[in-house]
Image 1: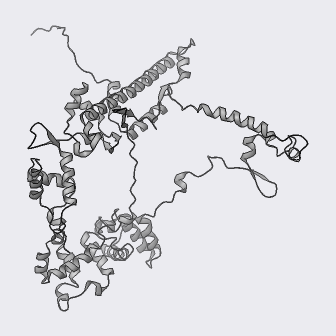
Image 2: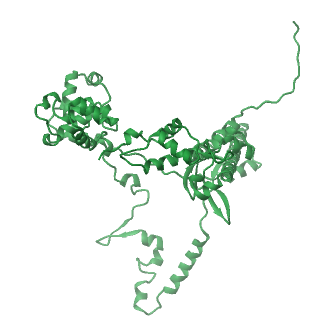
Image 3: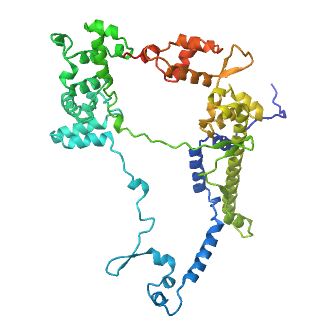
Amino acid sequence: MKLRLDLRLGQKLIMTPQLQQAIKLLQLSRLELQQTLTQHLMENPLLDEVQVEAEEGEGATAEEWGEEKKELKPTEGSGEAEEAKPDSPDSPDELGWEEYFDSDRRAGDREYPSASQDDLPSYDQTAIKPTSLEEHLLWQLGHSGLSDAEKVIGRLIIGNLDEDGYLRSPIEELAADAGVSPEAVETVLRHVQAFDPAGVGARDLCECLLIQLGHLDRHMVGKAGERSITLKGSLLEAIVTHHLKDLEKKHYGRIAKALGMTTEEVFAATRVIEGLEPKPGRPFYVSDNYVVVPDVFVKKSEGEWVVLLNEDGLPRLRVSPYYKQLIASKQDHSETTKAYLDEKLRGAQWIIRSIEQRNKTIVKVVGSIVKFQEQFFEKGVQSLKPLVLKQVADDIGMHESTISRVTSNKYVYCPQGMFELKYFFNAGIQRADQNDDMLSSVTVRDMIRRMVAEEDAQRPLKDQEIAAQLRRNNIMIARRTVAKYRSEENIPSASQRKRFF
């Protein structure tokens, strides 16, 4: 075997750090982009944020105010002029308007400087914070008659409750953490379960409902004479203990047969159970609601749909004029300083170009979506058409992966409302009357929701009946597809939607 050298010419794509950064910026959401740009501003001294210039009208207003002051100055010889003499220590002309209004006049002719904006509490400090479930239970624990050792166990139990008010941790694990016996934890847990809200501290749904039933009047649950021994207390407790699955599926006949009761008695018990709270911690749960800010706006201008990029709230970057002048100057710098400035300058220029390219790509993609879904923007969801990433990619000459990154976590605001860009991409359902035209799956889901909302509660539509109605509207759809769409829309089955009056 001989060793030899061959020279070959080829092309390959190398993922440089700059290219990886551009791809990463492309798929960031608006909030993530804002945080990333803020981080670049902190790390790169050559990056500078363009400040919003003051309105031109402010200077004119100040000049007009100065002229107005001169016109309102009292004439000599009048009584008012003597009070406003420049020699007076309280004269506005002597102190200046800012100093005059910043002083805080107090009793006893003493002056105290007003608090600055930095000394005032922030909005988060003054806003009312709702009481959490843990705080509410700890307050009750502090007023209970438990001993100090039992209160330590109680705080451990309360700290292990989830947001729904359930205790998911095993008793043995809590006992090991507290260094006590499981019986001691059980004793304190029964005290915690007596706290408000009713049902808190339960380990499962059955125990939660039984605790709430224990707070109800026994006359309300209604014992059934000698049957109470068989039912271990009441009809309600028997249903909750042994027939929750049948109750969920509304198999009232099966429950009545198992308990030896009439269907009417089971209906009456069901109404009481429906009034219980399966999640006791729900009233204390506070979710962090974040306002969705659109990345682009789509509106109609002069008969055409226009895509506008939303840049409000995002820092506008530029190369710092000071460092630009410092680099261009003829001053002698060390090699380390020059290398550092050159590196940061290239980084600043690259991030600025990446942001500009990102904005252009988003506008181009949304513009293509508007072209394909123009009827949706005109009429609404009933006119939404099937669309895939490849159609948009071929239309604007980009790869499908780029379209996928652009449409991730991006929102558009249009006359129909706020939508994620992924919303416009969906599969199609064949129409029987038009072989070439397909109906969007989102439109079919909307039709199923409307049919369920308008159905008779005593005779809800089954999946087969919904599919038959859709086929009468020339929509070729199978029963299993209806069941799939119904499940994705969190719509219960026909047996679970049935109501008895």
